[in-house]
Length: 328
Image 1: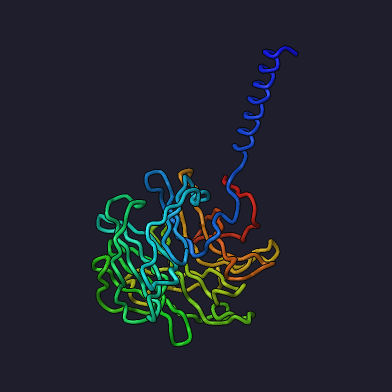
Image 2 (image 1 turned 60 degrees about the horizontal axis):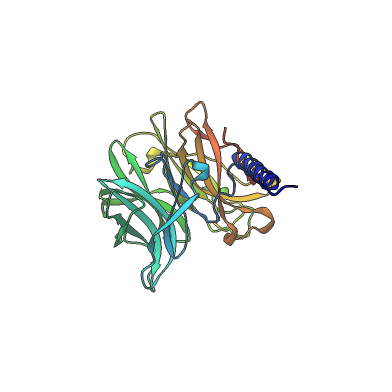
């Protein structure tokens, strides 16, 4: 075969291989789990076209980002490395408050108990640099910070640790670094499923509060049961109006709204966070463990779409198996 003809044939085969690879890539979508870290938090809407995702990294705060909720872990950037003596960097959340981006996260420093620590952005770019602002004064051991907004007022939700349980507290934020007024107990473990019933890991837990809003209603989705238990699940508080710092104004649903699905090999389903996709679908991200190796070290973030019930409450549906995610 002449050299020129051979070269043309090789070029043709190379182009065909590239075209086939490109076709294959367009058919490859996101797959669960989407991130091998637990305790996710995702921005409800995209920021500059990208959803921002945070999760427990233990020795730093990392922000992942991507074009859709299911692909929010596409890229990553470490925005904070633990200061000297700091460990157990958990559950970071990201908020735009009064012109700055603020990251609230859990950590321990030295021999101190867990506390809520704060980062403030140096610019309006959430993927830019941050200044370490230190701990919030919450007067007790505290973990799992998040933010609730009701009638234009901002509240810090967090979990108080002690007394043999984890329970959800709330306080008004006058400024991002300044809790003001009374720190109020909003929810504590009441039902057997919140206390690890059926599991040898049965520490009573209400933790990981996350606000969710729909059709004029406000909800708090939280995690119940021991974090390490396969029975870890999501519960729901529904705001009845009035003062959000009044416990009586939050009604707790008496059953979990998302729980394990051993039939598809997924257990320990907790730590919900939510996003509204550009195509109008709404997404739940949560942490869970594989049933065949249910250890906390194997907790990872998964994503699936959710809908709404006729009464306006969220309908998360059953936990889905790992693998390709249906995006429509």
